[in-house]
Length: 382
Ligand SMILES: [Zn+2]
Image: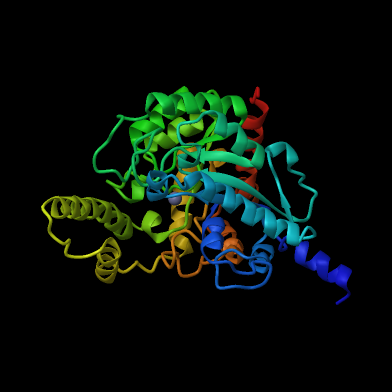
């Protein structure tokens, strides 16, 4: 093929496939830990050839930092390094990628894959409100207030003990500042109380960047309850359904909930052992390996993901459902037929098979999120 034709073929969205906006792809933290050439085919969930094949239009690259990095004071540098890594990818292939720093940079006619950022865990700002603007200006378009532990802003759904009964006073200030800066508030991962307080407080629509529906996983607070989903929709926001089996599959979800309960007991035991001068029986990595060995993932398929989307459409309407895959963030815990960014068309096809109209599929696969992203940006005053 002539280079120009090859380029056009690479850039074209697959026939019959609506443009995809995925709000949660965990490529950056992996890339910083172990660099791979994402311009070529890799064993990762996200790389350029797979993204092109799957019709990815806007990928929100997850700037993830852990509670441990927060404790150690390395979250801020890690966040910048992750953004640097994605900029470097785009700058090496300006014909294939473009970095968007806000919704106003988005051009639907641009054939390139757009990369922008979602910050998972607000740890990189520490206790400094002024750092919100620094990250907004680098392209962080949403912030997940907390991750797997309570932090300065909010309680986590995974935390066994709750610190704030929702948002902290600082967390409330951050939500207010995010509204003024045009950064979307993301309530995935936080406790129910924190989510409901953030939604009530926000003057702009709120998202859940990568959550499934608790309806299918009773007792698993990490997924959104019907009440929270309705509150998000009432505010004009969107629930971005995630793909990992630990979220869409009941057995795996309850296994993940139990993991955090047992991990807390293990960590408390380590603290007690060290205080008493005893050697802990195993490391946390060993604890994790033993846990994984007796808790294999269920073989979920794209149909389970579609179940959540169809349920969500029934509950809050097709204007309020989207997708946030968690690709590159959950290891092997993905549906057997929904494993990389090349696989979005399989989800669209499954939704079509369920009788969802092409217009609604287009909303779910990307249009809804673009609407909310623009609205939040338009409400910004700084
Ligand atoms: Zn996550």
